[in-house]
Length: 62
Image (cartoon, rainbow, N blue to C red; front, side, top):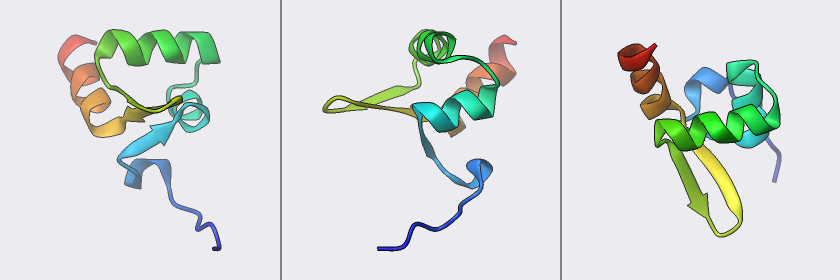
């Protein structure tokens, strides 16, 4: 299966590497930010971040 290049602003769930790029912070800070904002989604050992909820959280609290 070919991976398509999809813009980060078009994806709903971001993996941690994508979330780091989206927020411009390091891995530990990204993990902490995702947890504190309540936007992390765990599927097994995989950690994803709901970008839409994160954006809403940022609009509300930042």
